[in-house]
Image 1 (cartoon, helix red, strand yellow):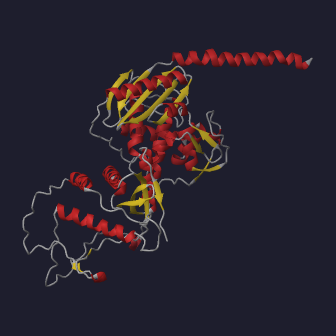
Image 2 (tube, one colour; image 1 turned 135 degrees about the vertical axis):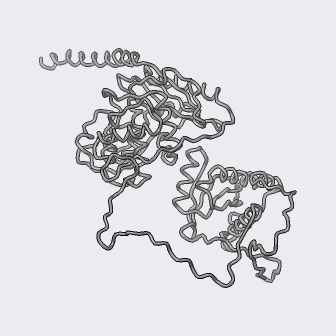
Image 3 (cartoon, one colour; image 1 turned 120 degrees about the horizontal axis):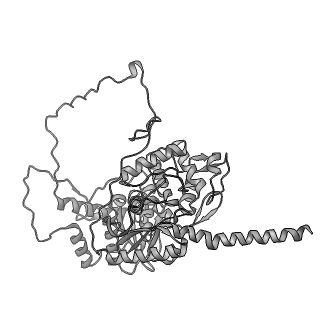
Length: 503
């Protein structure tokens, strides 16, 4: 009798749950105001907007700011990716979506970042804020300082996760600005937002917007958000044919309709944006960390006290070295000499990094010959060298460089060129693909080198002949530089693998 009496109650609860999902949630989402903005990320130009400056509930779009500050803190040494964070009862008690952290549990910071970026876990976001600033309230103050520095004029944060709270508001324009800064200010972390799955330490997590990432060509982020008050929100970014578009929607009525609207807005952005646009990256804001517990921006660090005689009271200028009878000659070189010297040094470096004759079999260890004349034309155009201009004769008093002619292997014509030592762990490299011809491989290397000068500066471009084609490699890098270069290239959908030192 008891089992029969409970059965109607169970069915009643099931009916109420179905009514909630089918009627109440869609009605509450439909009541949320709609806002949208489309931006060309390269220039910051707004291509379309609707209610873009209306303050609305951002929901979990908030976590973009939480993660932005965490990236800033890691970069400035406040905290490390492998530092362990102790979970508070406040963080553990956050409602879903959550990672399922327990109070007192210890977990590495990198796992909390993945959970917040991929799964949009509220407990992970709160734990990140507490790890950086000690409490969520102090972290919210830092979020607002950072928002002001980024130019987010109509945004106020009250928490680190985005659950509905009075006064916790933002706009479609401000969230688009934030998304653009996330992409350009911390490109080494941006790939997190395109991961379909991620290891969050305690378990594997899945991206909240994997459907759009899989279905829309070029989509690689950034963040979803949903609460009853906010509706279905999304800041999406996609790249096609050298164009990058950011589309933001507030107040979608469902996941499916929101994704369809964002896809429509991204298409609009690609149609309206210009093919050739000068890249104007947003200015990175000043560091918003704290000094010795003070809320004043400007840096984070420990106070060092010097007492007594140890305190420095004056700055003494060092004395000049005694002058020699014959001052050393001034070395001067013009643009052409520098470029020729760099090319010559690279050729010798490539030869030095090759294995000795007999150490490898077949053609896999054999370096490709110089590319045909078309390759030299590409290099000449890239370096802006005019081969028809004859330099003027230089005065004999100016010493440009010195070289010695040696006779290795009995060849009096061979020049010996010295190059900078690659000591200090610069024995790593990266490969950016295998190509059907020497010319194609060298052209790709040159294009990537020009686009990634910040990470590939000082590396050596090297083409190796393989059985299936020609490998395009950058050599003479440290492990850290190689890892950073690969992360940046992979974020741009460019194939990249690291090459470990041999021997």
